[in-house]
Amino acid sequence: DSTSITVTVASSPPFPKDVSILPPENRLKVPTISPVILLGSASPPSGGAASLLSYSWSTVVGDVSLSDAGLLSTTLTGTSIVIRADKLTPGISYTFRLTATYLGSESWGEVSFKTNQPPLGGSFSVYPMNGTSLSTSYTLSALGWTDDTEDLPLSYLFSHSSASSLGTPSANPVFSAYLPVGDSTNSTYALNLTLTVRDALSAATVVTLCGLGDSSAAASASAAAFCEVTVMPKTATDSAALLSFVEGIAGVQVLS
Image (cartoon, rainbow, N blue to C red):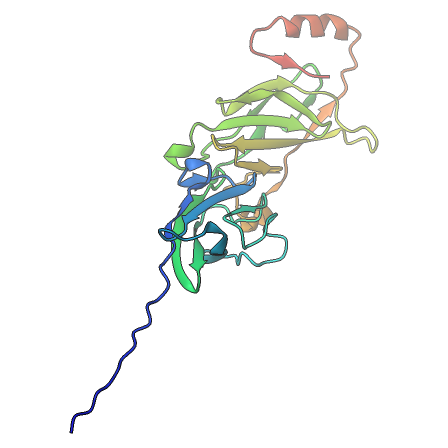
């Protein structure tokens, strides 16, 4: 006698094709201060219908889950996603995956990039700490700030507590200026100064403490003090003549 066995082989559905994700802004390093847009795409199998494709996104490497509340301004089930500004951590690497499914068969693509980290490691100082408005020239220095080579050049902007900038962003880390009279409400005539160091990708470190050695929270907590100077009012009667003279000196700016 002979025995026959019939074997039926079920063919699996064909897989989606060409699943890919464009690097955000076509960069391998991206700023976090603006939304991060990941544009994905996929094709159905030959002869298949695009309407049968479905999508899902996930994190492969990184400190966030794409399902975290408030992270995305889009859904997780489209071909593209938008990560909200300031939701990714500066200076670390991320890999995100787009999975395309067609009748139960999956294909996926990934994109990897690093987020831009703001400048760090520098100091902020001012000299002298005491003086007179329109008479004392104060020198503000932002030395030792570093960043990745591809993020250069750095720019420096100094400002004071009267919400006024001292000039415009400049590649020069040293700036001299005559300052306005400080706060007279408690007779201390204190004026707080601020430094903003920004890189070419617009990541910025804002410093309000003198003697800052780096951009870490620990350094901020242990820094000497707020960059606070004393600017006394000038009591001489020839202030107008002095102002006219100062404004005529090249490279020195007078603020009031």
